[in-house]
Image (cartoon, rainbow, N blue to C red):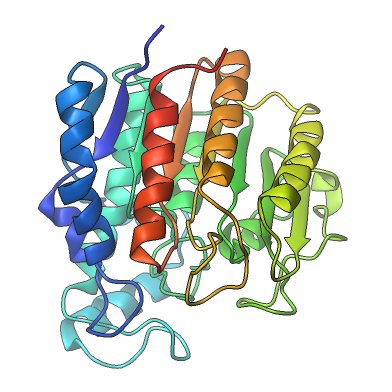
Amino acid sequence: MKCRVGVIYGEEALLYSFPEFHPFRSDRVERFYREVMPTFLKHYPDQVIAVKPELASESEVLLYHDPDYVDFVKKKSQDGYGYLDYGDTPAFKGCYEASLHVVGSTLKLVRMIMRKEIDHGFNPVGGLHHARRDRAGGFCIFNDASIAIKYLLEVAKLKQVLYVDIDAHHGDGVFYDFYFEKNVIIADIHQDGRTLYPGTGFSHERGGGEAEGTKLNIPLMPGAGDEEFMEAWNKIEEFIDNFSPEFIILQAGADGLAGDPLTGLMYTEKAHEHAVTRLHKVSEEECDGRLLVLGGGGYNRENVLKAWRKVLSNLLNPPV
């Protein structure tokens, strides 16, 4: 059976863009809209569904973030200068509203999947996994992935959510803020924290308290390529076989591909093809196909396009 894939597609998604010369700018998504989406919309008109970005409400952001931090972002958004963290995440005019569009778009796809209006979703500007409850970090202002997890557990009343992260940078915002929550299963493949921001994500970290054993970190050394990724992925599959998720979120950052200016991994786009294909299969077997993919990082523009093409193409048809 062919799958219906909702893709966030609209000018509002381009608002989340840091000032000139910053590596995280809207041209990443703009090029995807210009060079990739038209082909998919033409050849898969009944399967690829363009979904207009949506503004999140403040109450939705507060599902995860602290009120004082939200107020801080509002103020810096009005001021339009300074930093939201210690130097990676500059404020800009309208950054609050831009961040609300990222969150709202991710939540819109979640709701559409839950209502069976689409089978799977892809938000290319989503996956802002470094933001913590009370602070920004690593180009991430509001953590749309964590907010989606809170929504699924507290509003949709699901019992178990699986979050998988293949961005080269460890998804610290999601990992540590759900470290003690047993109903959030997390698996994260990333470049070793001793060699890359944010300096976290070690293999001995398996979850705390009642959540022990529900978390998996697989750090890879700089230079690791597809072979190492596939070996790590086998460990992820063995890990998630122990659980029965009702919804799956994949943060599919493309900064692990060879040639990224900020990282030292050496994947090809085959890593993304494999991850999406395998999680697609798990979603069909475990949770009625409920799979959401978030674009995450990636700072070599050609690599981003290669990875996101694989993401979209492998969401369209269920794996055999």
